[in-house]
Image 1 (cartoon, rainbow, N blue to C red):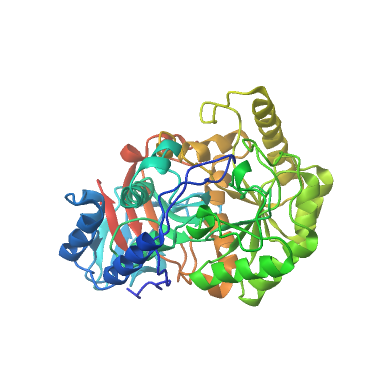
Image 2 (image 1 turned 90 degrees about the horizontal axis):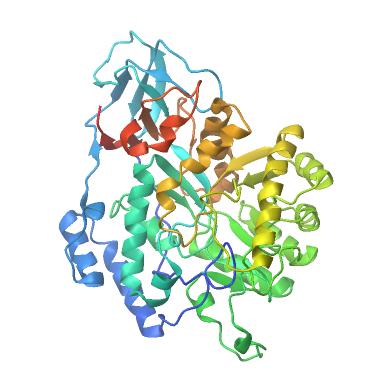
Length: 496
């Protein structure tokens, strides 16, 4: 199996509490220069500790506790080629389920799609029991370090505990069948490195690093008493920790963008509009000038990658598209003109099923509930516009500071059968999202095809009890219905 590319990440960044924004964390006081130096030393040591005993010692340094099974479990690696037989095949393209085929895996990738009666030719035979074989799922809007902790925990817990929780959630994410995630903001570089090096189990992570925000923007988590910022005022704690980066003017946007690229970002995230839960940036606000947005686009383009933006409104969407942004995150308030422009520019629309249902955040005040209602109504309209204008549409969840909701990650995918047929939904979360990940170009930390079962693609596979040509009910209980989970040819679960 070819070695995974390791991104340099000299610090373990500290996630911060969700302050005043609906899709980002806020400030806390748990960081210090001494702690940062300690993190740097630990991460340097992690690179030398590849065996289980070394991992246990490193984790004990953080917590002084026994190592949980999430970091000690060892996936099974076939000794040679693997031939998967007796299966139904969904290849990630959205085409009908195929029968009468087998799949050969070599060195962590799909080697070939063969007739069902193909000879093993030195391969280990893996009988799938007539079940559905499909690509691993891809969540295109995920906060790796910030999903499984509450705001209170983020404010009060030890840094080591927060990262151990993130590692455990990474394992759980993988065990839900999500083999790749596009991280859209937060300190995920250290966890990505640990997963790449086999220290912990988890999905492939495409990190964006810190969310870049203007002053008063959706990623500015400072309090009123922190204003104004003087020319010699130090960076805020959330900026030090890599959660957000405040930038005003083209020069600052260039610098902050380049910093994230230096740390190993596979794509760049900017905040181009307000949010539902925000105290200081209204939902209808437009953020960053077109020239500022273009500065980030140019810097990312110089590194062969792209910019995505958090934005809801038509004005913000159109400004971002004119600047060259390639992925609109959210956008539920888009009108026909904005949708037509997305289609014309070939941009991606990364939508989440924000439907003001049992999975929604609960707000105590009427103003934010009204913003939530607008977004929920806009979600229904957005999926209709995306289909009418044939816009490239991605699926993501955006679960944040909501540990009780992370087990329902796949329920957010099953909801889309309200708008699409089941095979189209499944293709969106596999092959289509894989195409979005590929926009990172040379900054792709895992070069190769993801989300499809075809020769040369990564062998990220699920074996499922279910029939997606009829429904996606199997997604409601992944623990029971996902019989085998494979990433890069390594088997992390097998309950055939």
